[in-house]
Structures are given as structure tokens and as C-alpha cells.
Amino acid sequence: MTRTVYVNGEYLPEHEAKVSIFDRGFLMADGVYEVTSVLGGKLIDFEGHAKRLARSLSELEIRKPMEDEALLEIHRELVARNDIDEGMIYLQITRGAPNDRDFVFPPEETEPTVVLFTQSKPGLADSPAAKEGIKVISIPDIRWGRRDIKTVQLLYPSMGKMMARAAGADDAWMVEEGAVTEGTSNNAYIVKGNTIITRQLSHEILHGITRAAVLRFAREAQMKVEERAFTIEEAQQADEAFITSASTFVMPVVEIDGAQVGQGAPGPVANRLREIYIEESRKAAI
Ligand code: PDD
Image 1 (tube, rainbow, N blue to C red):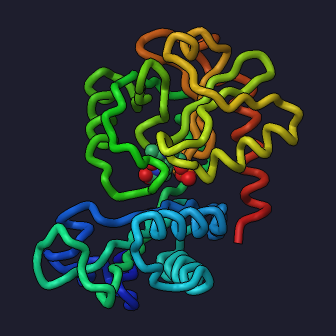
Image 2 (cartoon, rainbow, N blue to C red):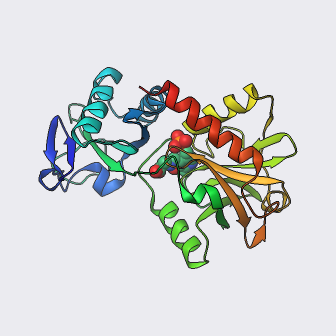
């Protein structure tokens, strides 16, 4: 089946969808994105993603091209047209395509470019990786200083994943001034006893939508949450570690820089949080 994608007001077969070579996203990574997961053909945490999108656009002074209702409609239309049961929807909005390359922002009336496409991932909720846990390595965090804005500048995270792969691991945790910021495309956590520890929100990390939901569920389940930075050494000695994101939900981490975390297998807290997150998200999906 040919995938139907959305570009600037049109639903098209993927090979017919085109964006200008002058698009600011292409030339300058001048754009923002969101990834929303789909379970049972419904959207998880759509409202949170729409809110963060609006904030990212506003921080970069990119015009918000449509209301949330219209965005929701496009998400739903793509899910239906591509018959998505489990997977993700990728959305990208750039500052648009002026007539030439210029560092200066284009004129006000330049239409932002809007692209959405689906990624079918059958078995997303029942991932084999979640049963085994993943291995991470640490790498220095050399990204820019506004990581709270979800921009499409993903070269370093992409290189980080390749460094992990070269080291026989699955992903990388980034470290700045001795403390873990976050994973290449996810938020990072450790567990000590009944306490979940994850870095506090700031410009240094992306304010994960999954993070917000998972911390809420954790508190509701009487777990303690400490929002503070932690080091790789502390993480290696923790009882458990895990990551969260729209595409992995809650994913146990069982090895950090070659050192086994806890028993070297997914721990009860990560497993429980994954279960609760998926269950509650399914209930609230729209
Ligand atoms: N990544 N931190 C970074 C750097 C991320 O890129 C992401 C998401 C997260 C988790 O955010 P959320 O829970 O809202 O997905 C944290 C997406 C999934 C991606 O780039 O594919």
C-alpha cells in the first residue's frame, strides 16, 4: 500500500509530495516537529503534543499555521487513510520556503511548510526490547542551549545513536557538566528504592510529553519523584534505569557504559510504569 502523506493542505501519495529546495527546514533546520504515537488507531497525548508544538513555534516566532482542531483532523485522516493501528505520526512545521537562501527570516507572509506522515509499527506496545531492556553509552552533550524547543536539528542525536551502535549499545545518554541531560531522543530516569529520579525541566532538556504523563502516574501510584540531575556513576549504581518517549513509552535500561544496572534485567518499577502508561494512554486516546 502506498503511504498517503500530508503536505501544505494536500493529501498525496508519498512519492508525489514535494517541498522546495529553498525551504528553511532543508537549508537551516529552521523548523520544529512532534511525534505522536498511535495505539488501537487512536492518538496518544495529542493535546500535550499540540501544546508543546505551539510553544516551540512561538519560541522561534514561526507562525502557527492552523488551529489544534485542524491539526487533529489531519492526524486522524492520515491514521484512517493509512490504516494505522499501532505506530506514530510525524509532524513538521518549518518557517517556509522563500525565493532564495538568506540568513534573515523571510517576509511575514511566507507560508510555513506543514508536513505530516504516518509510520506503521505493529507490535509497538508489545515491544520485545521492553522485555529485555536496552543498553546505553554516555556521550558529551554538545547540542545548542535551547533543547526545550523541539527543533529538527537532529544531527548530533543521530550521530549519538551511531556512536551507540558502534559500541554495541542501543542508545546514548548525553552528559553535560558531569550530569546526564537526556537520551538522544528520550528522557532519562533512574530508580532508587521507591524513588524515581529524573532531571528537572529547563532549557537543557526537552519537556517530554511522555515524561509528564509517567511522572503523574508514578505519583498517583504512591511512588516518590525527585526532579534533579544525576551522574552516570549514580545511574550505574541505581536499582533501575529507564527512558521515556512517544515512540518507546517506558523502556527499561539494563546497562550503562558496560556496567549492569540492578540485576541486568528490566526492573519492577519500569515494568509497572510501562504497563500503567500504556493502559492509561489507551483509555485516554482520541
Ligand atoms: N523524541 N528528549 C528528546 C531529545 C527527544 O527527542 C524526545 C522525543 C524526548 C521525549 O519526548 P516525548 O515524550 O514528548 O516523545 C526527550 C521523539 C520521539 C523523536 O525524535 O522521534
